[in-house]
Image (cartoon, rainbow, N blue to C red; front, side, top):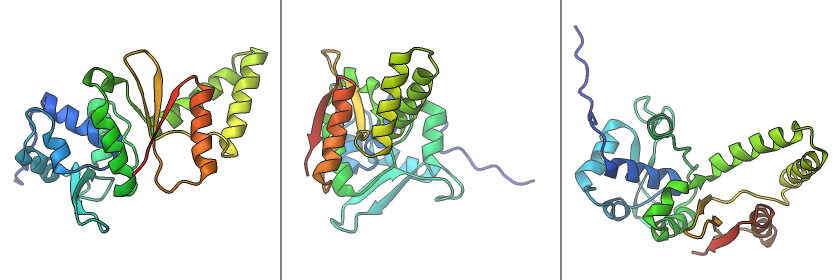
Length: 207
């Protein structure tokens, strides 16, 4: 009989959840970022890699060792993005360049711990916005239909753009966070306009 491989992560702890939340929100981070979480160790980060949920690669521009979630089929059929969603309910952000994502990492680490549970990633925001537009247009209320249709039209035309992530601060205001690296002025304005449309505060992170 074939032997079953031992599960490298039979138990999950609070620092695991925090580490995977960071990876889901920022896309990429360094070992020092993961180790800033109380109870987190280099050995545990290596366990994530052994389990197939995280990969470690060298950034081609800086030479830094960068950690990020695996995608379907990357590591022995494992899929860290799907596993995180199934295990914790997070909708992982699709990682971009280290220059871009390190800005999100910096912003994430400044957010008070009590506010981090309110974070919504770009992919989650997009999914929720699509659902909101559909529900508003089906509400039967003319004003709601008109506003939702206007937002949908401007979004499709690039006049509105979703941020990298949002969170609710201690004052109850939704903050729209964006790493603005090489975006043209029109894109940044579209992201700022999205924040204004939903009465949020815009925070642009420069690298």
